[in-house]
Image 1 (cartoon, rainbow, N blue to C red):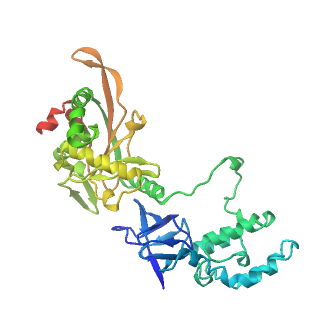
Image 2: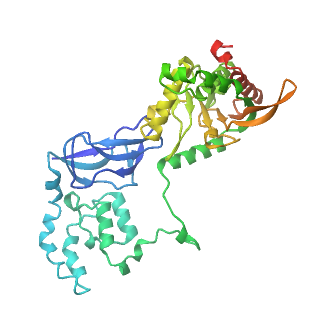
Image 3: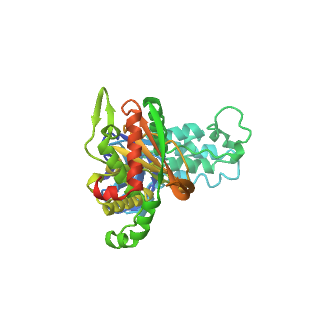
Length: 417
């Protein structure tokens, strides 16, 4: 009995996903809980596992296809062995299969030889991605050997048929190139945007179009924080099992500023202003797939050690593609550290629906006047972008000044003053 493997619930407000990668193919034997494919949502990549042991009958959708929650991904014949399941598909075509053998000699022979196979292909019942690929490539159905149930073809079947067609008959496979002169097209690479990248683009553009966004700047002397870190980093790591970085200091400094200036931790919802009396701080992390912002929950209740451990764990999960929807939702304020890539100054874009974001930058030695004398100090530019609809310039500037004070005199963070 064939079991349907469906798109699981992907989290609140997430209704669709993209099939990023199939990890199995038709005919493969699979064990229970074995990963079958990777689904890419607007926020994370999740694996879909087999609910039964058996053999893959067919892949109902192709890589790159958009699927809805509850939609069928593939069928598994429960209890069947992979090798056994891989052979039934060619079996019905055993008689016609003998016809193509003499076909290579005469050029006209392949077309009539493929006609019987066409009766076995059910293009109409195949997945939408398969039907679209057939239409785009112009592959005749008669050339397709289906591996799916009831004669249904998969994307792999279409590609196999396309590769078997002589080169002179394949120009129809190239109409995907957009119209218009592209004199250097042979030196370009065209890659479809991932769902995550499209979401990032849409959300950032939405922030620019919706919010009255403004940025204010300041600079902070990192001397005292760096000295404190250097003096205690070994003891800190031994006790907490995590490296003492700068991010925990900035998280704590931002929370001090958010408590004093609640509008910076608020958001607009319709005609209401929602002031949040909790502090879930998002920490922007760059990954090969794009920028993600995992959230440190209740950061005001965490110690420096807890914050560093949480950030380290979220960073590892982000790089491994293991973040969950819960890891990425509900932040009230975001910190982005472009300094790790060498950025000296930038204007960070808001992370909707949040109303403000802090940008950290590269630490650079610069001459500063200290007590009437010119001294070289490790300085960092800070930037706060904010939504002017809810945050006044005064509040944004005072918030940034408060962050600066806490970083330049870190004992304030320890004493809560």
